[in-house]
Image 1 (cartoon, each protein chain N blue to C red):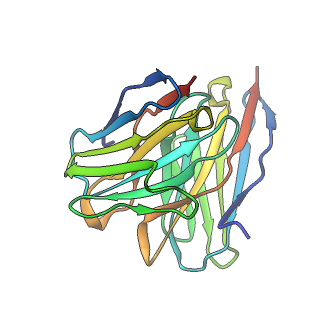
Image 2 (tube, helix red, strand yellow; image 1 turned 90 degrees about the horizontal axis):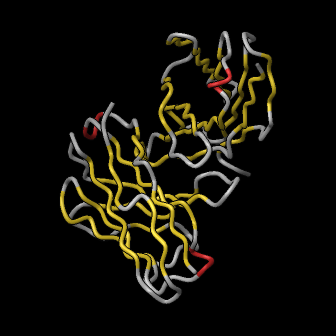
Image 3 (cartoon, rainbow over the protein chains, first blue to last red; image 1 turned 30 degrees about the horizontal axis):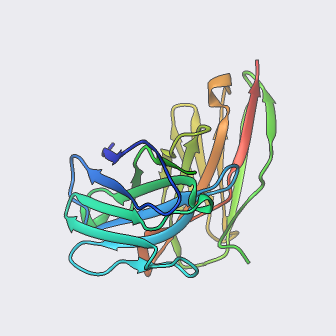
Length: 117
Length: 112
């Protein structure tokens, strides 16, 4: 299957700081990537759709000024959690559809565990 | 109403038994269906996809789709302790095929 990487895998930061998470498609191009958040013992919650060359689309209830998304190239999307607070501590996962527009199979990155002190 | 519904479990089966996981969805425009496995602390990994009515087999796994009943299931034969994980059902719809709707997942415990 297609490979999606994320960096960092784990980050601990102080409250009020900003954290950047990178998501890369390693062996395919992705015009669209997705960012999810998962709290313990809960399911994946879609936060936003990252679109290469245009603005991200945010799900209802997700603050676009707090979760900045930049899809800089066909293989890289970044999520920046600005002014992080302890309630932002979560498991952040990105995904990308492989194979272009004709297929919709999603491949997930390994996730980034964010802990805000 | 949630887009995708799953029983949260846990579903407990003995080693070697068949585990049956079920999922229902609400949007009749749904066209693609996926099962992902997620181990604790890890991201989901794709097990199977299914697009048309009927059964699709891959090794010990069989996905079953019934669009008329808006129902998709996953059967795991000869269950192993290593199959113990949370299984997520995901659905994409015709008008936005890249956007997935996930169920809340069913936790499976396979007891040795």
